Image 1 (cartoon, rainbow, N blue to C red):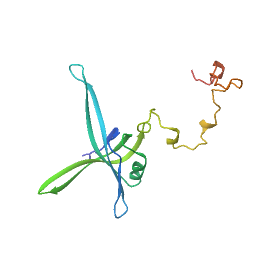
Image 2 (cartoon, rainbow, N blue to C red):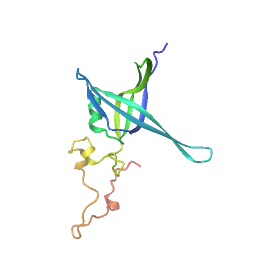
Image 3 (cartoon, rainbow, N blue to C red):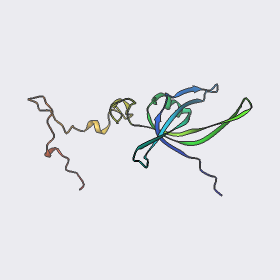
Image 4 (cartoon, helix red, strand yellow):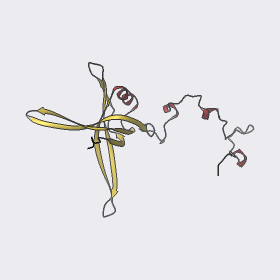
Length: 161
């Protein structure tokens, strides 16, 4: 018999800034909420949206990274597992379910930014990458100082088709 699988994958946006804390023993914990939205058209052709909110908790190094780089509105991919906690308050047993994140990937650009791609400062690659050493296909006209449009002769001839 199978042991079972407890796996959750979310792609959504943070509904609040991450809340970082540390236990007395030094364990780093970051909590946040992530919104996922489903869209569809109803029978009358009207667009409908349904947003679900998910509590997510990060531990250890992932907690540090999440608290440092994620902000309200950030789009993020999270992979983890469901965990249900229970406690008693005023004689009533209460439950909450959260996602314990095992993996996290930041998506999109900066929240509130105008472009969908990360800004140059958000890239985690060394500045001396191979792309920065390639000559630019767009050259400058020395007489007018304006950027000249690339011509047909500037196109790389190593195209495989």
